Image (cartoon, rainbow, N blue to C red; front, side, top):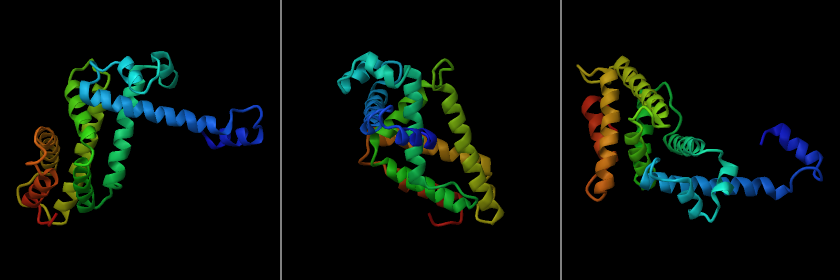
Length: 212
């Protein structure tokens, strides 16, 4: 709700909705997003249905679609929430390459506490390689952006003389993304023997002069 809308409700309480109604609606939306997250991360987008999601929280399909008009809109909301949560943990991307890479390490470390998020990423990113998948463009944009962030970080280290000789920033960024994705799959299969953050730090120490 915008500030203007909030003011209007405050001035005309009798003609607006009850005070608790907006909070209740937001609470229901969060329940739907949590249920959708669980369904999409276990069954995938195409196999997981609106009815499956509605059943998880005792809603009818019509009741769910009152909050999200389509399955595609629900998927977009789930992916947006995932990114917001992830980058809140990582911290803001800065002009300092070391700070950015340390943020990525924090993100990977945090991923070990949210296996559902990791599963969601793995399932949907694989599905979305199909150009007809509704998340195809989202993941294209996301991977392009992550590679750009990585390239900028490694380029900053290169300017500071902190990147080892022969390492190309753009190539290092692609390798970083590939390592993170590969580690996530291995960790989901056997999280007792895979240290995602430790492996990432080892990679960064191998190509830079920094102690991550």
